[in-house]
Image (tube, rainbow, N blue to C red; front, side):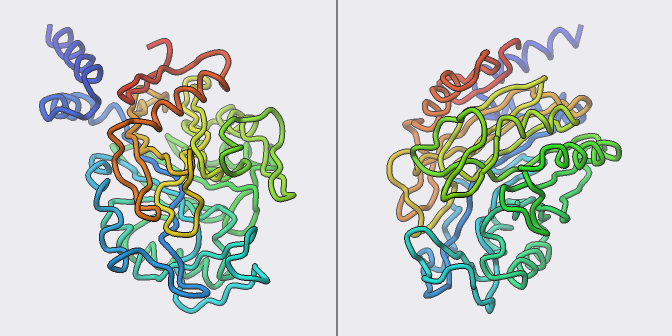
Length: 360
């Protein structure tokens, strides 16, 4: 009899608003603590730079996550993509002309690792084209400083691993720019081998990838490989589905600096791009580039299947600082992109941001 009472209550809670009511939250927590995992994920994070000159947020960045910090609570994993290195003395060598039109080097002060920890991040991706902006010294400094404040790091040979609710979880990081800190999304068979190997020893495998073209013209997911600045940025659909075929339970994409569509493939959620999340001063934030989301997802702890979730709409303001957007523009954008780009339809995105598989 109790089972028939609890199940409608949980459904009602999700329909009204996921994690919105304290009563609903209590019912959700008490009945699902051992049956699901809550994943919170955001896109690109670039907290200013100290090279070639200091371009940093107001008050040295102390308040840059304040407006959205409460949305990270309750996550078994809180994920973001860190664009650049945390390094106080590394000398960038990538750009002949620093801060030029097509070449940027992002070097953030190591003290900012504490702000990331205070915000609530538990895992940060470094598998991207900016992790070695300050050379290998900068990449190693990033790993050391993040681990020093208790944040796990993922990218290439460095794989985040942890245990939640008795389940072993692994999170490998891939990028179109291969390095010791990023497995390649261009090597799809190699990616499948990595995922399959991790799946043997872990209950849940969540894949992070940095790929696709960039900017307002990259909102839609094309068929085939994407090229940007004369670089092959990968076939993101092929990659994402292939790693799920190999055993991945969720795929989190970033890199285009704009939001992209979402789909459910074989019961698993793919977010093709979560856009910019906090990109201070040096990124283009016009039009769709300033729209972002906080993705909250529940996975079945036994199967890894996508259960339900919520998109929290965010807008970047004041030079690139995230704040909640009551207008919900980012929800409508993802909904429209998903309707256009994903065939057949596989996910429901409601106007209030609640998401669920189509057949649920």
